[in-house]
Amino acid sequence: MKGIIFSVKRYSIHDGPGIRVTFYMKGCPLSCIWCHNPEGISPLPEKAVRTNRVGGKSFSREEEVGRFYTIKEIINILDRERVFIDQSGGGVTFSGGEPLLQPDFLIEVLKACKANGYHTAVDTAGYSSSDNYRTIIPFTDLFLFDLKHLDDARHMEVTGVSNVLILENFRLLLENANEIMIRIPVIPGINDDKDHLERMVKFIADSKTTALKKVNLLPYHKTGSSKYKRFNRINKMEGTEPPSKEQMRLLKEKFGETGVKTKIGG
Ligand code: SF4
Image (cartoon, rainbow, N blue to C red):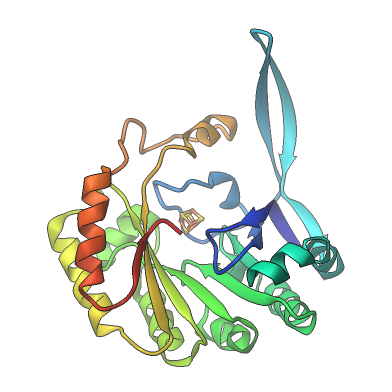
């Protein structure tokens, strides 16, 4: 069995506890207009143009993004980093894209990781069948669950899908998962207005269960913008500035009032 992955990040420290290896799985059912990983949206390998500058000259070459990995290859990559993972209390994270878009591969790779003694995390946008979540819960130590917008019509407008299934799956995980961290991207002009943020704070306060460990507030950043050129896509967030440090500090304070540990960044 193979899964398609578009990037492997070693020594990752923002995708769960300790030092981790993060596998970015290709394919996502959402199309968020601020997406930092547009190369993760298509479920197929695709071509991109990479331009390097050497001595004032530019050299462009075509590269293929996305390749198929076997479960054995994944375990081999983890085994090579085992010493860092073990000493730091780290593990492996499956991110994307949306890892649950490859449910058969995901369940088998999670089982293999657990059988080899690795702490497992799944970073999900929540948009997959509830049965898929039920199947992976026993093999997932931590869910990183993205909450983008609580208003269904606005969610549809900015991500391309309804949030009804997402919120259903969120409740399922709150009641059944080992641990959850909520990730809220703070996107100027999209979900950072006062009303929505107050709603979100109340929603978090009402969602407290023993599984809910933390809220991560992820400020919008522009580092993904060059990718839109490489992948020949329109960047609808062109010209948008990230939220200020002060805005993020105030938000951290507000979300902290829920009693759930809150952090800026992953
Ligand atoms: S859910 Fe994540 S990967 Fe998918 S489109 Fe949105 S930001 Fe991009």
